[in-house]
Image (cartoon, rainbow, N blue to C red; front, side, top):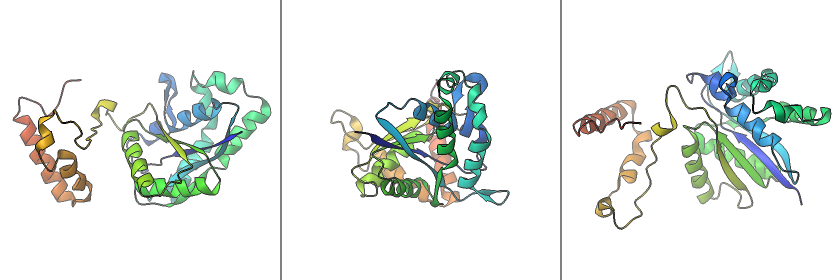
Length: 244
């Protein structure tokens, strides 16, 4: 029995710093961005797994009059040949037959762009609907290393609300690229409390509950909150920035 596979690339705002590096990767360092990660995942599928479609989120930004999703797709197509520059990808590409390489190129050419979406949750829900229409069994959700943890969280939210078909198995795949000068260590994951032997267990509301509304605050309030937290942390023996 063949498992039908879909690949989902999270798009990002076209004004994102080092956008091209995030989308392609850094061939000279053999560091995979979205495109290189996509190629590795597709080219290493087992024989009983078949690529059905690739989906890119249709974000709200534009460049040169072109929408975010379409601009990203055009960039991928224009830079397909650069995949050969990645040392770990070249052997995978070299072993493809002519028809196999043509099929891979065609899959990129046939990328489906979701309707315009406002945020990551809507992007996931739109992609899930497309995969359902194509009867996809397994989804590889690709996102930058500094974005993947949140994408996984939002995937769980979408599934809990019935926005992802129960038949679809989703797997989050983090690329080797992060936003700007950040590192994976800069990602902050705040879980709800779950252990009885932690002092915070008896403090309600917990920090995850308190901080959740942050992204819905006006910009001025966000700045005020960050300044308050930074001041608090700085007063605690330099705890505001933990050593790497």
